[in-house]
Image (cartoon, rainbow, N blue to C red; front, side):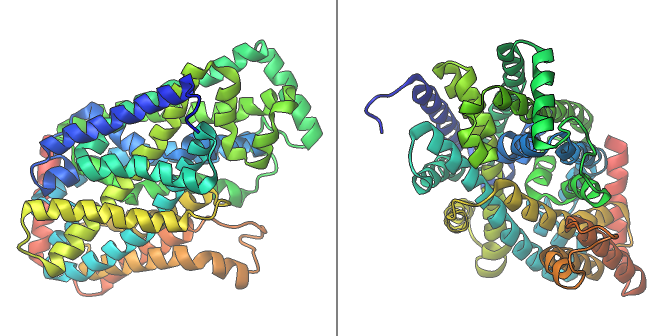
Length: 511
């Protein structure tokens, strides 16, 4: 495998060494568990914005999304549209409020910890259920990152799937294990920049290589006639249910613990406006680049059918195959590093959130309340290894699809925590029992809805024989459960409502 090192491998290896170096520096600066989990709540707008973006946009951005656009055309870009809308309102409505509320509520380090401190003694059961939910869905989410990493290492080192799986896992585990949140967030800034560079450069190179936009359009139209797909239409062969299911991905943002942690780690409310502008600009350019790569790939491989063999077997390899044909080996190494950046940034954030949940919400809460800061940090590192092993086991099937794994986990978090967090941050009368009912209703619906629609509804919804994305019924039922139980069940104690008022006042004063 290493008998003839080429420029691609050299460049890629240098990137890995750089990321591990960041992990070592962060290790030296990690003094306590708060540093390991939230970096001491000290991040400025640039790091907050790019870290939130990079931890969000996983391998599906450079592999899953372009692959779907390549096969089905622009009709699959509704996911990107929904995500842009959801991310904007997550920054606008949640970011600043969550930063204040978590600090006011005993400097909560995790989402389950926040629910506990927000609702007092009644919050204990919420914390436990929330922690179990996080571990369940994050393990699935981590598996998607493992699959993406495996496909990348297969391409670079020409190894089999399972060897590639181990390589990708080790690369991510190493710097997350060593450096914690500081390493993950600092490297996210580099990784986000690298992802943006790759997603802007590649479409330009495709158009230039093919001879201009007119040639691109000509070959796209030819592919449309051959495959009977209008690749340029947003609505071709797409039902109403498919459109709302794709756009509903945006709802997921309100409940993603690894993204919300970036808001909690910010230096304060005042930086959120600037961070939002940076983050949304970065996200728009990245999503536009990913959609464009998938769209241009249709015409490129129509023009070069002899190069399309690997992509025809697995469409999620389209970005990898394009850069191999378009760039010299040195640049290929840099651009492949961008894919690894997308994988590592999200996977590391997910591993860290799972680790913090196991450590803060189980180990410290139930077994070692008096554990020292050093003990908690090392317990967190061991938890990273445990979650990684389980995720590798789930990802062991080489037929696993990145987008399918991401879809289920994204829906689970969005439906379980999205309504709970929105009600908690906006409605002073939200009760502990209401939040508990919402988390259970949302999470259970995501798990059971596909079975319900298939077996009970016979695959139909609103008259369409089309699967409805489970985040929609999950989000709705969760919100209803919170509202009804909070309004008609036991009322939230006055002390809890007064603490809400205190946090809300601080937020409006500081923003």
